[in-house]
Length: 178
Image 1 (spheres, rainbow, N blue to C red):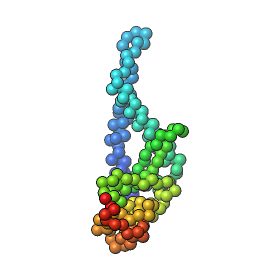
Image 2 (cartoon, helix red, strand yellow; image 1 turned 90 degrees about the horizontal axis):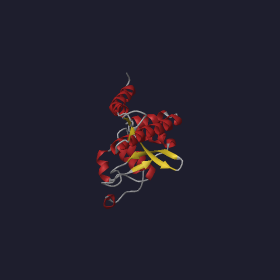
Image 3 (cartoon, helix red, strand yellow; image 1 turned 45 degrees about the vertical axis):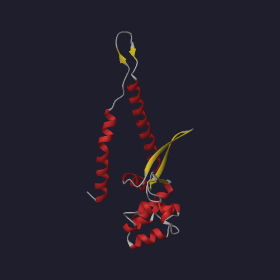
Image 4 (cartoon, rainbow, N blue to C red; image 1 turned 180 degrees about the vertical axis):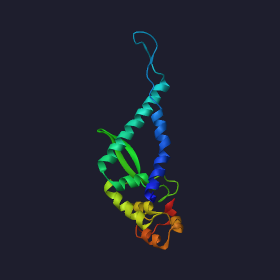
């Protein structure tokens, strides 16, 4: 088994319990309590459980359709390796998949942040990961925003990585970093 297959297997196994748990939840039917089909109304808890399960199932379908339609091994690799994550946005036409890259605390401390990424940009992300395997996702975000990361990150970078991040934007005043 090569390294990529091992990583994919580990990810698949990591998410297997979630998948099995969702599959085993079942749907609460209305209870049959006598002749001529008299049904008891579901409880509020049962309705909430069903709504949550159906929401998960619908989102799985939307995400699967999106990934299948893209026919992009790079997208699949980025998703499997947690380089990008999926958001579902409700629109007038239905639910739409949006892709984003996590950049929490990259530009400002204590800031939950993400940078949207289009499928067409995933090749650039993968190139950044080749340039900096440990910090390629951050490098992509910095290049996209044309902004350097907060100065404390530089302690972790190699000399070559420092140059890559310096090229992303002008020097930042540490007072403006949060």
